[in-house]
Length: 92
Image 1 (cartoon, rainbow, N blue to C red):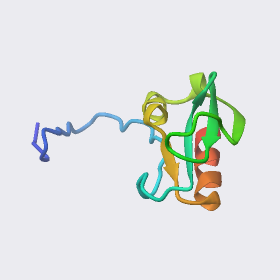
Image 2: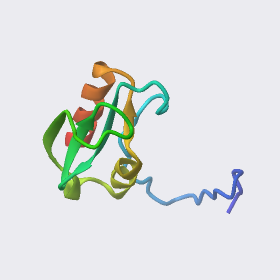
Image 3: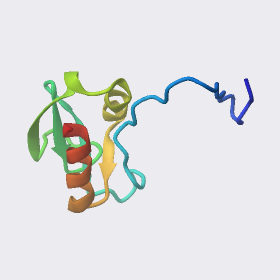
């Protein structure tokens, strides 16, 4: 298998995994963060806030493994537009 750098290997002929929710940017300066709250995706106003501003009806148990891992640390959303885009991705 060819080495692509950083210890990542690509093997030809294998199906690509389903894409995880995509997010742009980093946590710095993000207006919102998505995290799990009692089995549902919740919207938090900051990376360390304890109470969400909204809990969605999107069950985290139905998410892809990669998305669940992202939620564990919090998925940043720069603004309300990016927040809506992320929720659409995760809810589909």
